[in-house]
Length: 233
Image (cartoon, rainbow, N blue to C red; front, side, top):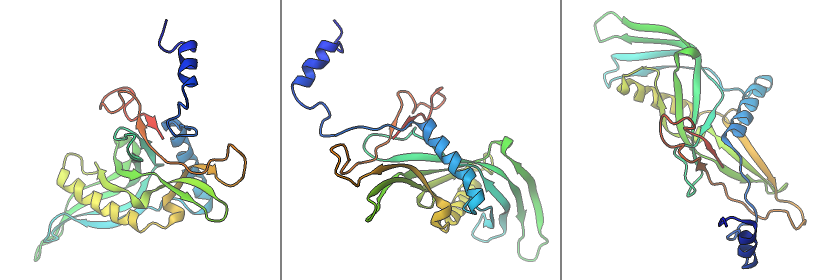
């Protein structure tokens, strides 16, 4: 007889609570969460809350003689990955494809003529991405008592990008530039909602509190696996 037979499960439940102190567990999968993020990303074009294009000059050395100019860098919808998640925190990885823009690398030392070393127009098909680590947060309204699970791009850390190809030093400078730009984003552009629980009411099933924990699916932390990054909160 299997250890998970009906009789064995009923016998275990007769011994007392099997929820280990939890009233209930609710699971949101990566696929569902990413569909929510994509829907909000699209809707914000109607409310002027979309992510703005990024422009700026990124110096690659302390003498400021080598630099990259970014123009009209547009990012796609944020997508969650749980390849770094564990049940001890609420951390996830957020990635965004770079959809379009222009990249120009130049050199201009004192007393010399500016030299353009490389330039190209960016397309999504080139596979450039921006990544960051982020903690999902819980915000409970004082009046409506609604518990909202939020993702705030302005609070991302450990930014990474591959816009400079194999040039890791340049990629690090570009990542720092993007991190600073995200820090300046207002809430209506940077915050996405991933779920909501109604904490107001006197129904026996009304939750009184909740915690957000993230978990990777079995095998989803192995790079190259078919389900790499799968999981949920």
